[in-house]
Length: 311
Image (cartoon, rainbow, N blue to C red):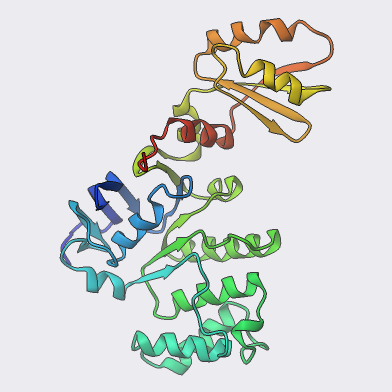
């Protein structure tokens, strides 16, 4: 091992990756503690997947230093890959093989000792008992997701890197998946997970927000919301779409976002925002209330701050 710090599974500084003249990951610093569930948020194309691939040894950074699982991310990529479970966005297992056959194949790739015992234990733990002979291609989205997680765990990794693992699955399957993740973290496994779902981000111990390669915020959900320094007003009443069009033009209004039968009007300058909405607050048709900013308000605000690295 190259690092003596036993508390941090991921500890990188200035990690950078370029493709041609485009910087996809721009000098990111990140530390993730052992047993932590760390959420990685950001719009599509922001560099989240590229960052994960550098951590697990599939891509080499142009610059930066640090370690993953105690191994140098520049020099010890093979060792990192041996101890990481990486779940990609796309289901990547053999659909004409059964659940058991897929898990046995992955166990062979990792040269897992007592392979049959390991496969049986994984099948039992992930709830595949009774359907282990079912072909992977016949599984629903939620069960395919569970098979992918099982395959990530077959070699007893120390770190899970999960790239939007719950995209396209139903709420029940998502909840069950997160129950598994929290149980694994309680047993000491570290998890770095990318997601677009705000309810999932709120289930992480800490989160980071990346936009177009740059890290804009990190900390607990409470830290990130407080650090954004947003002021938010909630509006209810008739004709909200027309009202939104008017309010968006006012100085001090950063965003106007529908939330069911209400909408949120948000700005970073409290005084400017309150002055901007005065003409509408005096009416009787709409009810205005100052509310705490939500993570989704912050997420949308941060999206507006990111600078598109395609331009």
